[in-house]
Amino acid sequence: MTFFKWASASLLGHIALTEMLFSLPLFLVFLDANYDEGTLTLAWALHIALVAALFGVVGAALVWYTISLPLIKQRKDRR
Image 1 (cartoon, rainbow, N blue to C red):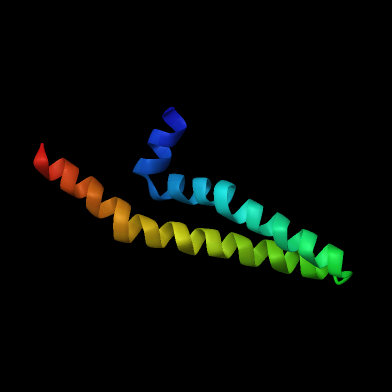
Image 2: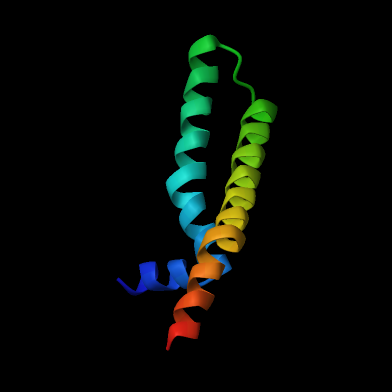
């Protein structure tokens, strides 16, 4: 449970959790789709990995700064 507490309380934790829960499955789905189409190359696989990782970082940062951080500040102000 401490991993999820850390992940919910820090930007780095948000990024790590988003990479595991969003970017990795996204990468695997697109990798499989390209393999099924017969268009998968090493360069394309690296491109998919980079894009999925960047989407994870950007998504985590957006959620952190627009949702999580204001809620954390609001909770601290109530105490």
